Image (tube, rainbow, N blue to C red; front, side):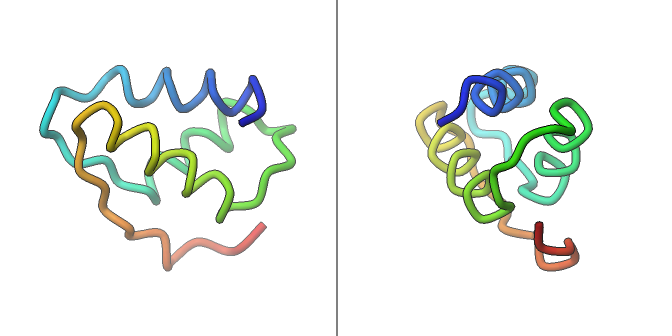
Length: 70
């Protein structure tokens, strides 16, 4: 996982409490704003968010269908 992506995901997920649900759609939007030069695709970012969130004991809402693919 690229360092910028790792930092952006960590910053977002650290705001959640154990057992919370993380919205992929919201997390993707926040990551794209925090790291606008990030070249990873939405699928790659989604996978990284899901892996990190589940490792932290968070639930993941795969609600990104409204997003345009990058």
